[in-house]
Image 1 (cartoon, one colour):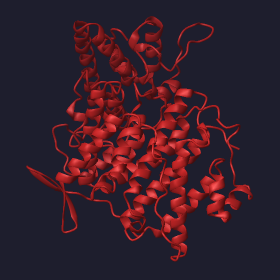
Image 2 (cartoon, helix red, strand yellow):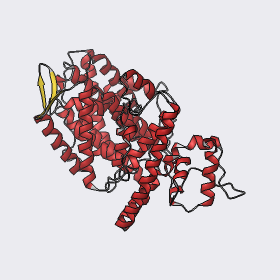
Image 3 (cartoon, helix red, strand yellow):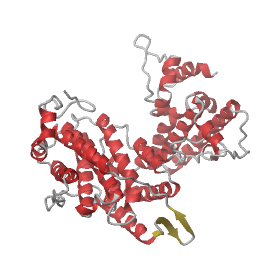
Image 4 (cartoon, helix red, strand yellow):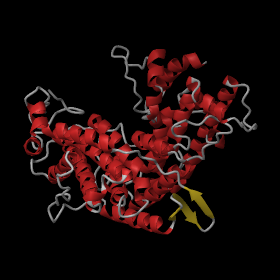
Length: 499
């Protein structure tokens, strides 16, 4: 019956159009008949995007035949709405929905075992190569993995996810996100209007960061953060922040400012800096500069990020940057973030003397002087130019301050170095940290500074600075056809338009 899923779904929509679980599906009614007509091609293409839908009392058979993730977001919304209105109704919905979701998980498990008949849920696989091979084979495996992520995001308050799908000895886990961190982070993102969830999120995130460092899986963490904090239009507010805005305005800045104030701070901040650069690269697709709420949210997060980088660099003496491969690598990551930030600032076009531009000028000037020193060691290494004495208040300052306090205490009391190796030492355990290794980064730093100057030279509000710092780069970008300007300041539409 799987090949008739499109027709079955269309029938459900036509017969029960007011069903809350089946609402807002990514299909439209036929203009002539007024009914839903769904082709198998459309159904397959939009199967995962059906997560934005809503059904009042679908039967177990409907759950099995309708794409399971089609109802998850709507189940959550319906349950949360009932929870605010009536505890008794919320309990009834939870029991009803949990039975449906358990049935769905049983069906997925049965189908998987039919497709992979040599896999027994009760036999522990001992070959990691076999587990990895299974995790990358088959469209159905990938589909189930995506469904489990959505369950983590929308349904953990309704039902406990079957251990079968989270135990690598039973089911192949996603190779880049074996513990479903993305779905769990996104679940927190749905609840950030409550301050207590900020505390729970920061605690969970610190444990994730520590686990990634201990297990040598910080590359996974970069992917997980990029996936969790990208792909949605940015309209977060102080009262109801998006997951991305809270990370960019409170959590990431806290880790950034601890980079050099604690000896082991760089270990935890390095993957976050890599993720930040990737998130900002994708953010241009999630920006609509015609929406004031979007402009304000993005401007706030960029300003806060740059201020935190500046504060972190202020704690590091300039002469200590180049001799240390770690300091050089972290400084290079800071500059890569700035390279992504400048075009975004130009897209949303705040005032020319906006604090974000002033911070960008300070860091760019510092980087240019370091580049000159690399080329000519007789050029003195000057300190980072200071900012205005009264920076604007940071959004979510309480969350940021609490994160810094907790992180600082943990790094001071639990992170210990012995014979050049870092350990996380607790009363009942002592785990070695697989710290990232950086080679000599002087050449890469030089290339990144050169790239930063080129990007700054294309900015209307930074080109004058670059002209004074490096006339060769300024000429190359402004007289050699390299310049790209925004049309009329702010740019309409998602992501901006450049010429």
